[in-house]
Image (tube, rainbow over all chains, first blue to last red; front, side, top):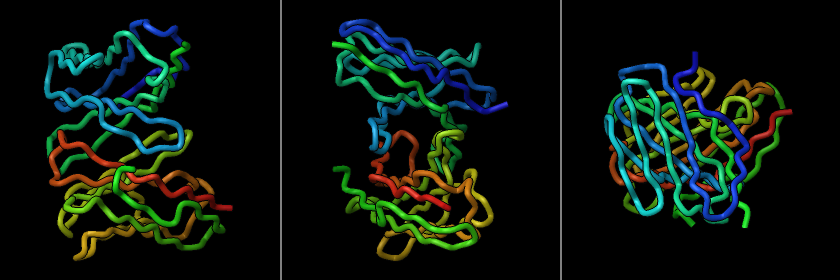
Length: 112
Length: 114
């Protein structure tokens, strides 16, 4: 079983829609949860970083962690064409000196 | 432009060969990470260095090795190359080594093993 599973999509939504991206993970020891955005032919960029359970909001982006069900989500409100990219979730056990595990990524297209 | 540079951009080589990928972190960043991204495996963390010392190890094969030099640039050495090693190799850097820090990714080196 992979450490983190992510629906690869592709996901296509109209501009302005609310987007929900999700991952599940297998090891309850994971405490740090990240979302990256990767544009085509570019390196990933960190969007959200959360510790333990709960929500974290940054502008149009909200990251949600439910440790009881080992489920993490990224919500994008008022989606824009510039949000079209691949979104990767990642998990780790510790904050430093740790192994990162990435989901395979969900491809998102926001249609104007 | 993230400030992280990687050379070469593209590399084509044959099975059994050895290659070296180079990464220069952003000015002031002490931590360097290496990742491999392939279509079937996705993005995989390979190894992390902090100020010249290995800090964390991921899914790095024994045929692969890395080091960080005193000037903080890093090299990833891939030997006895196999077809399955064809992938995009990213280097990233951050100021320290804490997970919540933004990692700045380079443009990647695309390796094709024939």
